[in-house]
Image 1 (cartoon, one colour):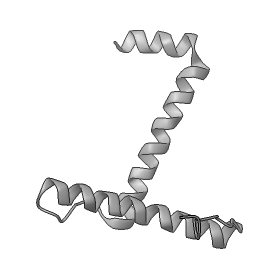
Image 2 (cartoon, one colour):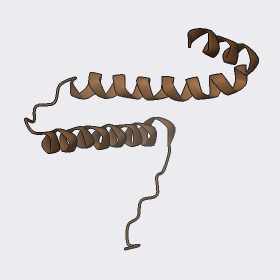
Image 3 (spheres, one colour):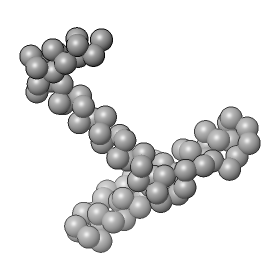
Length: 83
């Protein structure tokens, strides 16, 4: 399998790197969430753990939006009044 992927990489470098870059972005985001909110989940049952993880992801996304607002002048448009 390793040989097969190596040859694929050699013959289709751009396609390979496009997919690999997605993976590196995901791993970077996971590492950032763990650094900011901790590596462990405190909840005991599966549903509570899933909810805790989703809450961490939402909290992380909010910190990214707030950072972009103050550091780079991004003005996000939310769905206020459109319900």
